[in-house]
Amino acid sequence: MWNLTREEQTVLIFLSGVFLVGMGIKLLGGIPRSQNLSLPTSDSLVKVKIGGAVRKPGWYSLSEGSLVIEAVKKAGGALPQADLSRLNLDSRLKDEDEIWIPGEKIDINRASPHQLTYLPGIGPILAQRIVEYRQKKGPFQDLSDLEKVPGIGKLKLEKIKGKICLDEK
Image (cartoon, rainbow, N blue to C red; front, side):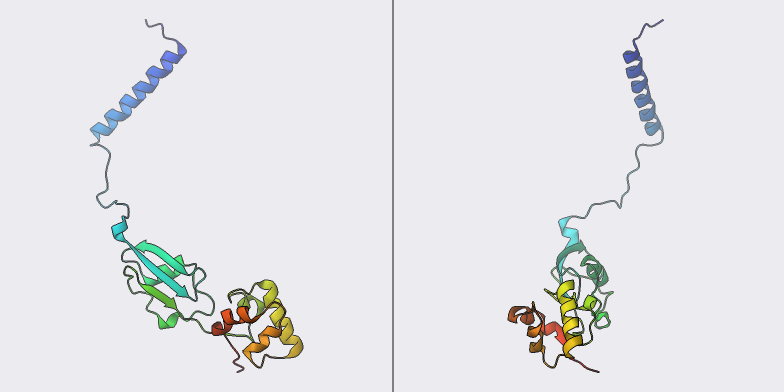
């Protein structure tokens, strides 16, 4: 009857398939659309600043109505020394809120090398030096004694001074 090439047969089958799919959609009432599906717009986002005892402090955009706990998660989570009991983690965020996660100070005479790495500018090697110095020379008597540890100068000490203590309980 029809003398069609292989290419023409393929096109005909494809067009028939498209036609049948279209008819099926039409008979079923069209493509369903969700009434609630909407992408967040700049109006439905809030910008919040989160700082203190979190892994990645800074400004974050979250959906309007988000909770404080969601901002903490967005900032990488709370650090081990964070004191979340002083916050209402279930309160709703408002645009340009600034949230400070309080943290206990790290006891420089008791902290492990891992805990010391949460201090700004203190990496694993420097943390290990602090612990080794403490083991050889005994507990630090004054925060300025940290300057005796190779790699810690006045500037680095100033960066961490507000985040450390010498509590010997």
